[in-house]
Length: 329
Image 1 (cartoon, helix red, strand yellow):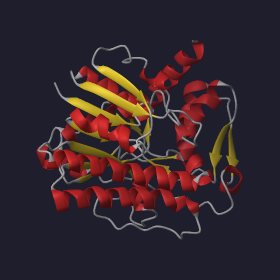
Image 2 (cartoon, rainbow, N blue to C red; image 1 turned 180 degrees about the vertical axis):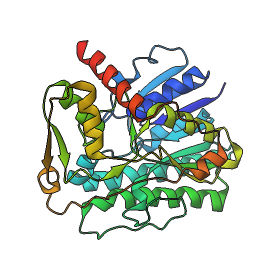
Image 3 (cartoon, helix red, strand yellow; image 1 turned 60 degrees about the vertical axis):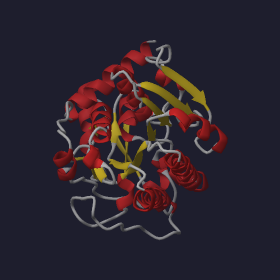
Image 4 (spheres, rainbow, N blue to C red; image 1 turned 90 degrees about the horizontal axis):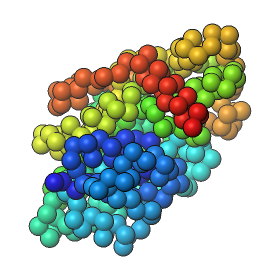
């Protein structure tokens, strides 16, 4: 039986990953400080005999050393999340993203020197591409960040440092790492508290409120269901040729934010309206966004049998159904 450690495992993606690994007969340990996640997300597995939850931070060196002492795999998902949080707390964003990654890598190197190579999955982000002008982003595309005076880019820069660190540990020490860049992951248990757009739209629509769309709404994104993302992560970790690779993980079916709002309105109440809000009102005066974010998934498809179970319509329907069920409780 493999033993996996998930940092940030009480978060949206982490909790789904914990469930998926338990279903595959893993022993799973989750560490989370519940700063953005919550132990309630783990209700489906918390009483399972192969599951344990540790309330703590991945920045605690002593705790992390004890936790990695008998694991076979580490899924490092602990990070700052959401545009809202990144905009208002840039110091927290940078520190949360970089130091725990360095700590995890150094502790796994300690284990490798003791004779056991623990495989690491590092959760990265499409944010590392910054504002690359290419219409579709492949993993070898250039990083194009804005100026340091705009806090918007601190997240992408910090996640890029994480990737550089992980790949350096592979090159210098042959520590097995797999890096996944997530693109707009959505699904049950995601919260709109930190600017996540689909849960924001769904919660507003179910409450009978207008849906708030930032700027002109013509920003283009690709939304992938968390189940498809988690299945891809596990498949990559099971594939030896994925080691030392960087992979876009998400959907490559584009939709504008305005279209997304209209899809939600149509599914809930066609009488609802869209209201537009400037970035300055939503975040701050120097906020800068990316107009289009579409991944090239060719490398992922060459490496694993990537066949998404959910299209956008099914994803929206699932989020609506689970949100309604949660509100009834």
